[in-house]
Amino acid sequence: MGKLFVVSAPSGAGKTTLCRRVLEAVPDLRYSVSYTTRPPRPGEEHGRDYFFVSREVFQGMIDRGEFLEWAEVFGRYYGTGRGWVESQLEQGLDVLVDIDIAGARQIRERMPEAAFIFVIPPTFRELVRRLETRHTETDEQVRIRLARARDEFAALDMYDYLVVNDDLERATADLECLFRSERLRLERQRGFRRRFFEDAD
Ligand code: 5GP
Image (cartoon, protein in one colour):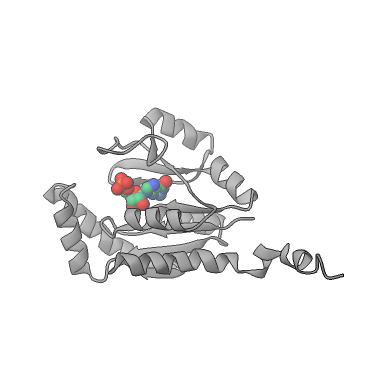
């Protein structure tokens, strides 16, 4: 079985860039593309960044139990497709999901063996700076995101790992380290013993 890695972060923590870099660096790590009812931002692609669906389609998926978890974030629905994630894990592949705290809480209940990682900038002040300088939100949206970040921080104890994103190189290396150490577990290397003695006599 592969392992599920849940990554959450306040909006503006740099999680998207970080996850992208880690996915390039770690072989056989799969990214779960979420479903959302929010419209695509410029440059986003259906099937790569998200599956952009209508509320009706999303509701149908909820009714049929097709989500591993789902949540409403900033007035839009977001969810992780259950079937795809489970089939990757069954094939022995590790899966990364980038989801909010409410979603992480649902996964913690259903799959306590998953790893839970929280990514955060070094200070609240830096979070404010990053949100204000990326200019993708209105002042009101920035205010809402900062209020939400405070709430998210209060839920930190639910996570297993904390990655401070003060320097992108270091944070990438830290995150990579978590994925690599999982692969060093004995149970993930069961075939090694057989291969070791293969040409012994
Ligand atoms: P954005 O709209 O900026 O891409 O994402 C907004 C928030 O939704 C982020 O905190 C992101 O982690 C979260 N999110 C993205 N996909 C999912 C998902 O499938 N489930 C849940 N619960 N949250 C998600």
